[in-house]
Amino acid sequence: MKLILPLLFSFLALSAASQSIDLATEKSIIRETLCQYLNTNPNSAASYLRTNKGYQMMRDYHNMALAFEPDSAKRKDIYKDIADFDHYVDSVTLQLQTQKVMVQLTDTIYAYQYVAGSKDLKTEAGWQNNYPNLVDDFQKNALHRFDTVIGEAYIELVKQQIHYKEKSIPIELSSFNIDHYQYQKKATDCDKNEFCLQADKVYRAVFNADGTKGCYLFSFLCGDDKICRSFIFIKKENGKWVYVDDYPTWIIDEA
Image 1: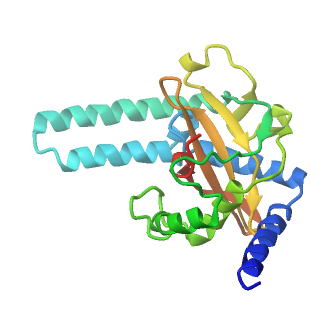
Image 2 (image 1 turned 90 degrees about the vertical axis):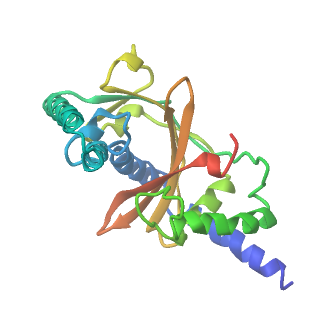
């Protein structure tokens, strides 16, 4: 009985947490935080607004290039690149005042289905063996997978997703329209339009027991017909849900 009770408690805790937020609220939370995540995705034109991550990444790249380049002629080229980039940013900023970024997305919120590879994290032994690796990422950020240390608490949300048993649900894509983004099933010549993002799927969310942290998944086309998929971590802060960081799923599964 000593072995059974902890496992039973763990199962009940996962079930209770995943059901603590109703479906309408779950959809609303994904809607509110997905646009925040997209503002960090370099495939989104809105990420190059001066307040967003794509812009900052390019500025950091240019600053680093200048810091390590002693040749004056090459530094002049870097300054020209900075001027060209700032001109692009100004253009994007102006266009986004009247134009939306089209997000090509399937009109279903899917249930994540974990696919075990060389290690099966659905088994307790497999999970425990891999847990130190997850701690290295989530608590220590040893390989700098995150923008910052997000904490060990989010690891349990990954475990909830691995054991997820709810169903996929249909959505009205227009209900997700918010901020700089407008969603639709299919966009013509999306790959040739910088104001169109070739997204793939969004997945159901799970939450911790007190409903203050959550995790869902999002996938998009990331080159050469390859699909990139990430866990999206979110938290409730001052009564509002905000995006925290993302984590690639290939570390967890082999789907």
